[in-house]
Image (cartoon, rainbow, N blue to C red; front, side, top):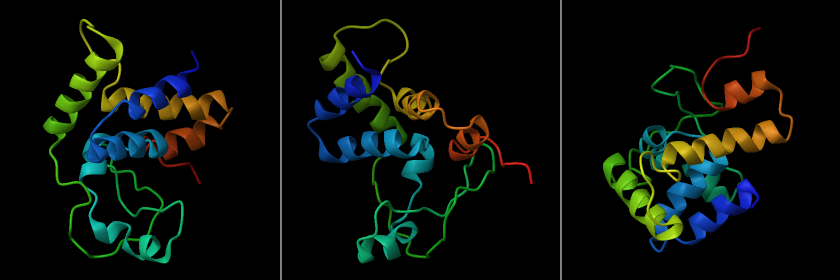
Length: 142
């Protein structure tokens, strides 16, 4: 089965819209779950209200300090009002329903979906320097 199709099927199997949105956002943006949950409405407000797609974000990855491409707004309302722990627990429960029992690491964890984003880019021959930048791993050299 195609990796993209499998990930899509996993997300489609989710019955909670909030978690389905979180999973889709991770796969489509490459954001980590902690960076995604840290987003505030102000981060997307202007583009969202204009109907602009895709929405660009203004944030810096906590782990590396690498800024993502964006413009920051100041509305502080969280987009997702759930904890990282709740996301991991829901993904684990859904993965067991979707794939059956598994031992060890969840093959459909938020981190695995982030890795799928990297795989999609890599499979489409995206330059590794851009890939690292989009993943929030490194700034491109100037």
